[in-house]
Image (cartoon, rainbow, N blue to C red; front, side, top):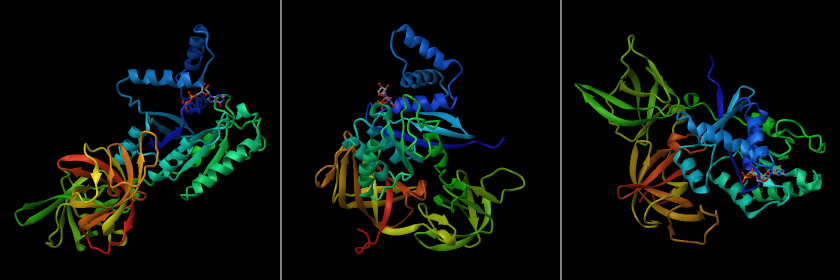
Length: 420
Ligand code: GDP
């Protein structure tokens, strides 16, 4: 059967604004919970003399999944209309940022919760900024607890206006702003009869409108060279394809050297007849029609969509090093299979992940801070923007021998200085 499409989503919001309740609702209303689960939790609530909460439902579900070893608790899912929605659990900003930036968990879309009674809080603003920092452009704002404000349109309109203005400052545009009550189930799976003034989609309808990131094998080719082996007179170029596909007869361009050659054979599959093509996720060795000198770290692509090349890049970086990241100090930047010396050319902005507060101008980035930086590398680097390619749009920084930071590339910087 056809593999089911899945979409990674993250739900962010101030504590108590209703994240667990919303998630509990989504699981319950899509029929994703085991049979009898709702009744069971309701019975426990009655026994303990407390009011039933959708949030408890989710907690109980999590606990149950935790007991099964095979299920990754950080990634529970529900299924709706043939699509699997994987909810990336973000226990804290620090973990979330780290996972997102390191590529351990990449959210393709987000729901950002705001409490209608409390209105737009500092935290709601920080979350909006955080999503944009991480390159999550697909998101909806869910204005929750509308039941507590009498389902009034003027309350919702006020929040919508204020929040859209805020997001506009960094050109972020939500796909939708939705008035809901997660507790009562208004505009989650079914349209609310309390808010006839709202004509837009429900939360589930909005999720269905979110687009899946392009399937990796259908992207342009990216084949970072891991090693070059010599066998007799032949040279075999080995590595893992991180995007797209390649086949015998393709002309390849190697970046940043800009050399070209044609794929003559594919090695490394012990199959008969030999394979003539390979795709993203596979490790292969290739031989070329010509002896060209290329080395580990170069990225092979097709001519019509080569990676970017520069000696300077603008990045968003998560720092976890024991000593602070400092201007003027040398680091090693690792991107796919490439390693190159680099240094910080400029620190544009620093954010503390504990409270997402923006910090004052500084010459260094401390542990657990996120920073927008310009990095300069010693010699031209081939890369992609993280908004278009996953593996080649991401890097780590090595300080001495430790991986001390990870980041995503947001822009190419035209470098007057030509490297370090
Ligand atoms: P979280 O900290 O963001 O996960 O928030 P919870 O889901 O635990 O909800 C915090 C409190 O708000 C709980 O007491 C919920 O019952 C309550 N709550 C959540 N959603 C709604 C809502 O739509 N209406 C009302 N009245 N209360 C809600």
